[in-house]
Image 1 (cartoon, rainbow, N blue to C red):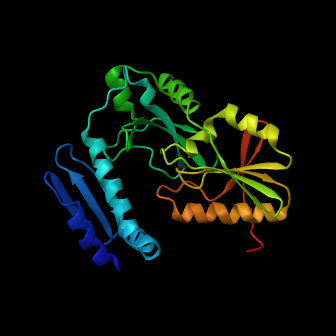
Image 2: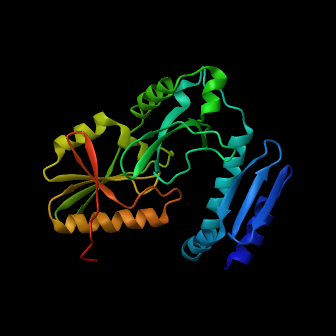
Length: 262
């Protein structure tokens, strides 16, 4: 599989009424745009080809699903008023775009040196980032969005899977509801977890669909955490950061772990 073949495959899978598909040869990107709203999604072909060599047809199925649901979200009107339970915070990397393609700023907040908080309107299978225009249309203030989103994230389940490696305990939250990484904003959840720690508490959000918490007892634990975070980051649908964070007294501090062992 190469970019040329991937381009043909995606064009065939994504073609449809009210859609315009264009190809940027220089950037090797495919853009699928909805004629209904004049907005679209741009995807980089080399990245998808790389995932295809690992996951084969599943990689194509995932990107097709992502584009289909993304376009549906763009075409479907949203209303904040009376739909407060659909507002959630999401975590993204600091390099994530700060505005929509038409130049409308997204509502966002600083989080750590590696991560940033955005706010989303849940649409079932996908969500849409809340921008300034959406709020102004209904007369909402930014703080109202933020307070509601942080309240809603505290209502999400926090069930974890546990694993032991070389005397260190690793906990994984992976519900695939789109807000797994968002649980890092549940301060009460993290504070309660810290009380259970007997070693250093290290947290990672390598992509949006996983939160990793580790009780680190030795150097081997840091190595495992670094390798794990990098692996999840490389394979995640929406990567955030391969770095981990030390959690102490309510604060998250990014750390760089140099892995020594396999």
